[in-house]
Amino acid sequence: MQLAQQHPQVWGTQGIHPHDADNYDDAVEAHIRANAPHEKIVAIGEIGLDYHYDFSDRAKQRAAFERQLQIAADLNLPIVVHTRDADADTQAILRDFVAHLPKRGVIHSFTSGQALAEYCLSEGFSLGFNGISTFKQAENVRDIIALTPVDKILFETDSPYLTPMPYRGRKNEPKYLPFVVEQVASTKNIDLDTLLPQVWQNSMELFFAA
Ligand SMILES: [Zn+2]
Image (cartoon, rainbow, N blue to C red; front, side, top):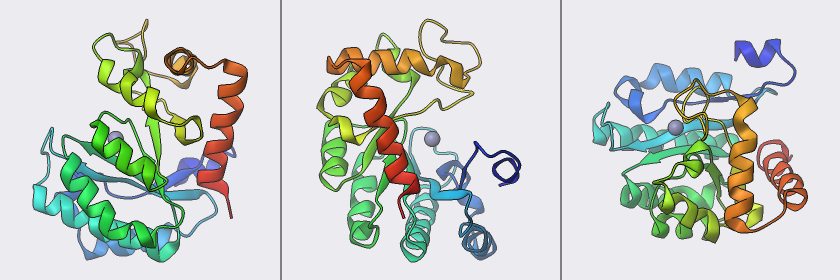
């Protein structure tokens, strides 16, 4: 919030990451509800489920996800979803709320399976791709990129993590984003002059549409 208020080119989200779901309580929820209605806050997120690391209890992760989906519904904000190794529960919970989320949102750093991808796309969500798309072993992610319509693709850094090839291992920065863009263009066999303005428009419509 502080960075967003200080810098005109920075916007933020409000939410509790699944890693921290054990700490979600009424006071935290009140804080999010009080701070999210702000001109520099464009979404509720990252919210979701992470059964890969299991840093928080899974039942608490599900409860925090559901309660924050209700916040997004009440405030009419899009969502930024973090989901890892939790495809079935993510889909089941989204299914309960999707009718109340007219602005939908993005499944960020998408590494889930094809079934969840197809469900989210069918409901109008976007999928976010980052440096993982350039990793040699990430054929599964490139398969998802191939099936994602270009008007549902978003680019992200996940900085400081997930630096794309050939700089994997260094601290990530936005300056490395072109490697992600080039990978997606090549995977989809689409030229940059088509891809770049479309993805720009996708992000503007998701986060800045009235
Ligand atoms: Zn995440």
